[in-house]
Each structure stands twice: as C-alpha cells, then as structure tokens.
Length: 187
Ligand code: IMP
Ligand code: MG
Image 1 (cartoon, rainbow, N blue to C red):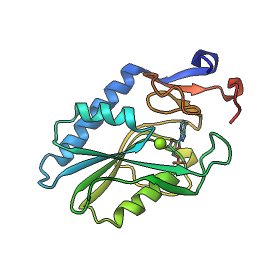
Image 2: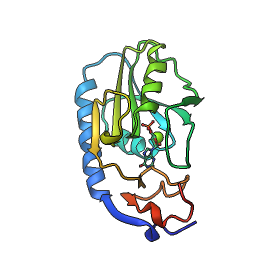
Image 3: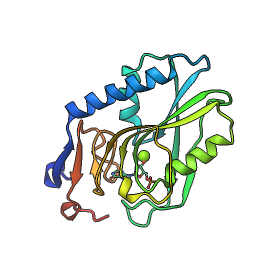
Image 4: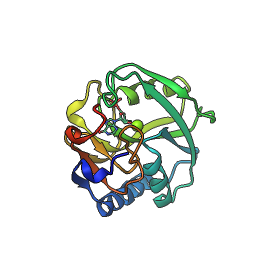
C-alpha cells in the first residue's frame, strides 16, 4: 500500500478543526433531544461513519443507543458511487417510536442516504434526522435533508477520519484531498 503522503494534495480539515466542529454538532444534537422522552438511537452507516460516530457520541450528553447498518452501491469504477444501492447489513433495533439520527461520513450524490431514509421510514420511527460530517453539495443528484452538517466541501476525492481510498487510510486523524493522478490503482 502506498504511503498517503505520495498522493496527499492538501489537508482539507485538520484534526483540531474536526474536533471543534464535532463538539459543536454534539452540542446542537444535545440541545434538540434534551427534552425528548422517547429513546434516541444513533445509526451509523458502515463503514465510513464509524470514526465520526464514536467521536460524536463521546461529546454528547443526551442518553442514546447506537446501531449499525451497511449498504453497498453498485460502482462504475472503484471510487465512483452510483445510483443503485442495496442493504447488506440490517439493524438489530426495532426503531418504531424511536427518535432516529442517521450518522454519515459524507453525502455525495445523495443516493445512499435517500435509500436509507426511505427504508427506515417504513419502520415508523417517531422522528428521523440526518447528521453528516461532510457535504459535497455540488455533486447532489437527489434532494436529501441534512439536519446537522459538519462541513460543506468542494467536489474533490477526500480520505481520512473514516473515509477510505480502496478501504485504506480510514485511520488518519484529518480529512485530506487525494491527488487521484498519483494513486497507483486508478479509480
Ligand atoms: P452517495 O450515495 O453518492 O451520497 O455516496 C455516499 C458514499 O460514497 C459515502 O458514504 C462514502 O462512503 C462514499 N464517498 C463519497 N465521496 C467520497 C469521498 O470523497 N471519499 C471517500 N468516500 C466517498
Ligand atoms: Mg459512507
């Protein structure tokens, strides 16, 4: 595997800026759910949202449960997401009557989150909201509601802090932009 320094074009969001924003988001979420009597469930969409979820929940004070889902989208190239999404790992929790907050790493075309929202609605949660660390708004193909948004970012391929390049580099503590021309495996 290549060292990320070979293709890192720039650090887009530093570790410090990530932390500051995640604390702010946790505070916003806390304020909104503080007076709710019904249980709050954070749902992480694997695998990209994992680091964000674990940081966000540690800064939250409102009691909550967590659960996981995984979806796969048919990909044209290794790094191009596409319209066709399917569920590969379902929830363990019965969400009927719960306040559900979906925690995502990035919303790109919007197809993944649109699919997941439609699927979860059929299970009749009390409320359903979306928290996404990153928003690549320029790439949007379907309109999706984002109630909590960390950062709007330009249309560039990013990695680190949960986001991968071919399943690697999720552990990096910052969000970097990849110079895809310098990647040994082309997307
Ligand atoms: P969407 O369905 O097009 O919104 O794609 C969302 C998913 O594609 C995200 O949950 C990520 O897993 C992946 N993705 C989109 N853009 C990037 C990126 O720049 N870096 C890494 N993964 C990405
Ligand atoms: Mg993802």
